[in-house]
Image (cartoon, rainbow, N blue to C red):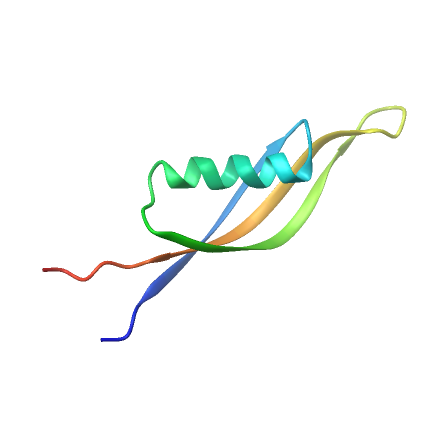
Length: 71
């Protein structure tokens, strides 16, 4: 039988870095979704403070996981 996957779009952020924002989204997803297999970055953005320094980093990811067969 061919494997079936599902893809969800999730967003999240961090005050530290883009990498930390990605890790935060993936870690949170892993608490409720089993069999995570891949992710793709859809969007990267953030906010800037008054002096032009990045204040927050925000990412949107497409996260793919396997769909289980019913026994």
